[in-house]
Image (cartoon, rainbow, N blue to C red):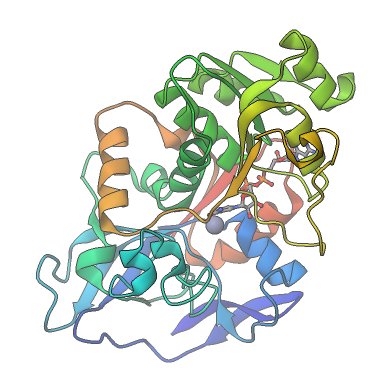
Length: 352
Ligand code: NAD
Ligand code: ZN
């Protein structure tokens, strides 16, 4: 079968691979729609996860089941499913301890395009189908559904980690697709005032539609100063980092109130150290919590997010700015994600 792979750091392309087979608990899925993630760019072009050779890229897909193992109870060939980016080993001590993202070892709940072949292939393998897949309701379009698998769960996790109290103030730094979903998540969690740090008009428009109240543009000066000025020098209760390099931690800590929370869902693809500014962190005593996490995956998470979409709370389809028809356009879509033209939020490739 054809697989769109990371051949080595800096090189991607189509290669031939054997079709995967299902273990007793597993499923083989044929993708119907896929989307490249900024994380694929960090992995393939920056080597953010280290060396990977001939590994199929991609971890955002909705698809049709073509095969299930003998012990799979709730799914059968022909079912259309939402496939989470994170497909943990649910029988692991870490999952039992509440951190399925790190089942067996750090970040290893994230298997696709990290520890095993990803979803940009004619077929892909899903471990523990009953625990990791969710049925796709007919009324949700494929392009919208594929945004649930990673963008929505990640942005919402940014809001979850941010300890948002009803009426609290939140700043979201970076309003690409993840940051935009973080805005929607902060709104659902009851934030009273939501600052967004960004400059692209299409993203600002979507951010406002998801509940952003204030826009901070770096072109108008230091972003932390702007947030402090807008909050009588106090800062915000929570900051969600969903873009930029490691230096952004300085601004995030600076614009957070004592007792507030900095939530990171960014994948820092480069750099050795993430700097915490000493004075703004109260010389270590400001009670400003810094948290960061990989998005939750698995079936229950997907089913809950599907409900949010199905019953009209949030429409993640607003992120999709470019749709390609045909798997042959995979490379085009991935490179678009790397170039990030101003009108792009997310591209989706419809497979047939
Ligand atoms: P993106 O590149 O499309 O969006 C990031 C945004 O941040 C862009 O709009 C960019 O202009 C903006 N930005 C860059 N520098 C900035 C700065 N200094 N100040 C303010 N804004 C700045 O990326 P995305 O697809 O939205 O993903 C965001 C991050 O989340 C990526 O690093 C991605 O790899 C990561 N990610 C993490 C998880 C997870 O589970 N934690 C899952 C998916 C993606
Ligand atoms: Zn991703």
